[in-house]
Image (cartoon, rainbow, N blue to C red; front, side):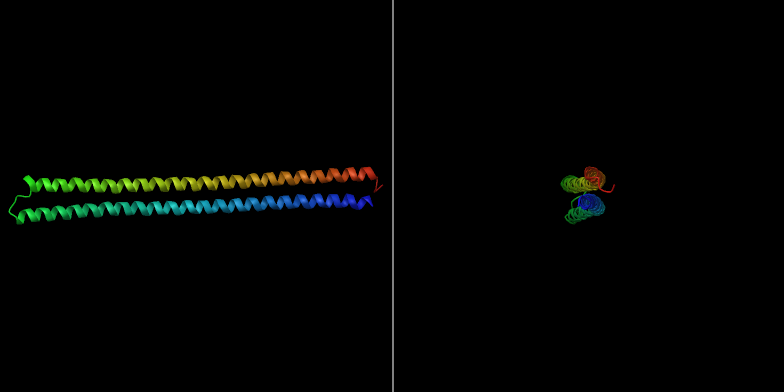
Length: 170
């Protein structure tokens, strides 16, 4: 009667060890999936950063063109009014237009750099998350297999004690 108990104890330990190993493998697979998602997010963020940088350059270029158009209209208006465009009030108005336009362009670039910094931080965070997920997966795998090994050894020890205590099999 004790032989089946010992065999059941050994089988139970084996199944527990196998279950722990399977759980460890599943935890590793989940962590690897999370790492891949984080890396994909990092790539999407990097792509968005490139698009935003291109949009910033286009916005600045458009603002420079607007400034040139405004100054051209100011020069044409001055000339139509019989005023010299390169001297006096007309020149001052054009200089003010240039200065204000350059301030606008500066704000466009500043906003672009801030947006780029936000993207860089997000990419760094995503890559950090990917690394952390991979490390957690490796840790879960190692821990799971060590636990499975401990369970198997515990079961073998229990089996040996049951077998030795009952002297069955001799």
